[in-house]
Amino acid sequence: MTQQALLLANLGSPASTSVADVRSYLNQFLMDPYVIDLPWFVRRLLVSLILIKRPAQSAHAYQSIWWPEGSPLVAISRQLTEAIRPLWTRGPVELAMRYGEPSIETSLRQLAGQGITSVTLAPLYPQFADSTTTTALVEAQRVIAQHKLPIKLSVLQPFYDQPEYLDALAESARPYLQQGFDHLLLSYHGLPERHLHKTDPTGQHCLKSADCCQRAAGKVLDSCYRAQCYSVSNAFAARAGLRPDQWSVSFQSRLGRAKWIEPYTEARLNELAGQGVKKLLVMCPAFVADCIETLEEIGIRGREQFIAAGGEDLQLVPCVNTHPQWVDALAKICARVPQAL
Ligand SMILES: C=CC1=C(C)c2cc3[nH]c(cc4nc(cc5[nH]c(cc1n2)c(C)c5CCC(=O)O)C(CCC(=O)O)=C4C)c(C)c3C=C
Ligand SMILES: [Fe+2]
Ligand SMILES: [Fe+2]
Image 1: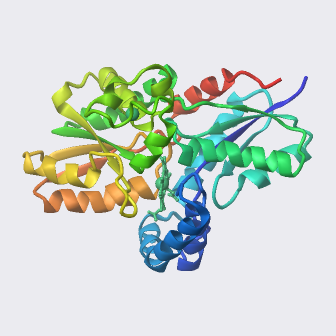
Image 2: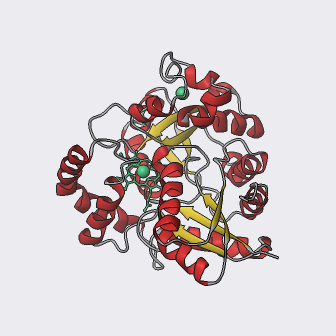
Image 3: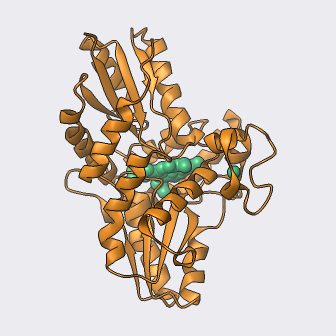
């Protein structure tokens, strides 16, 4: 029988915390037209400006969270790959990163070299965005076309609404919720508003009213990152038995001067402290593996900011990482992907 390989794809990290490696990673990442969606010349100019100061700042941030085995994002993704192997009986399981190593190119060529002709690509992002899901797929298609690899690609769609994923998210967070808290903030990676308008199939929905993303359905929901974030949040709150006043949603990691989707996490941290919240829990369900955005931006800087604003403690809830229920869920969700003929 033909073997069906599973290729898990995540974002990727710099090779090390040196300023040179971080600069090279940021350059590859930010020059991706799906990440900064501006004409090449404008993008080149903007990225060159960002690369003046950002690599040193980011290198410092990476140093504060780096593990002996390397980047947390890559190390956790490797552990996840190992953990899912025994559950995927259809063929080999490999890992690929959109930026840095192991690249999508390296992993796909390696699979083709082993005689694999059928691959399920699983971008590890619960919600859809061009800057994550689309770019991983386009890169895989480029590699297959450029190297004329005899590979048929099946693709896992964003799994924000899959019950197994939502159950695993709730189960992995349960011990943290049980410790008691005043408020739970679900902080998602942000996006420039421009990206939402671009993927809105109607051109009429996104950001046209205050609660448009909470009410999205059908085709609009299929492509609206912000709506999928609210969908995960509502499903999570229902599973965790939370009252509406116990939780809220925000968006982090803003870069540059363009308007990004709101509410901003930074602003929410001050507001919550100002409202008397003392013990804050923060979850980051745009990520399935802890990374610089969770460990440093929320776990270190966010915590300092919240305490300076009058809060007492901010506890970061780990991502689903290698939680056994998540490993199981991912294997089941991937097994349902229709095979390309
Ligand atoms: C225009 C800039 C960016 C967009 C759009 C963007 C979207 C986006 N990113 C993730 C997931 C991750 N991003 C990570 C790091 C990161 N993101 C940006 C910029 C944009 N992201 C930068 C510059 C960085 C690097 C770190 C820094 O300098 O601040 C990571 C972590 C990588 C790691 O090594 O730990 C992840 C994961 C999503 C899900 C997303 C769209 C929704
Ligand atoms: Fe990002
Ligand atoms: Fe929307």
